Length: 118
Image 1: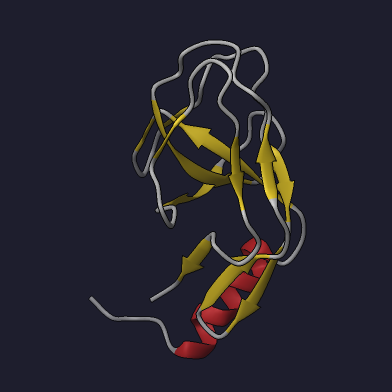
Image 2: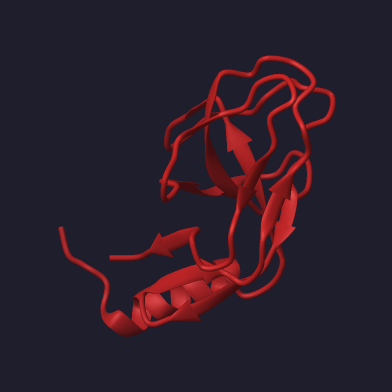
C-alpha cells in the first residue's frame, strides 16, 4: 500500500476541514458507524480548523452543554453536517476520553483537538 505525499495530505485536510464542520461526542465509533449520546441537551458544535501541513487544529473553544442524563464515557468525531450526514474523522482527544454525565459539561480549548493525515 502506498502513502500520500505531504501535498496530498494537506489538500485532503483542506478539502474536508477548510470550512465549517461539526464536532460531536461519541459513545461508540469505528470507521463505518458512530453512536452519539441520546441526551436531550446534546448537539454537535460548529467548528473551524486551521490546517498546517498534514495536521489541523480547532480555532476556538468547543463547548458542549451540561448533560441532563448519564451518557457514560465519550470521545469525539468530526461530521460534515449539524445532524445526520457522514462522519469525517474519529478523534483522539488530548486529556480524553471524557465522562459526560448529569450536570457535566465538556469544553475543548482552542488548539487541542488535532487531526493528522499520514
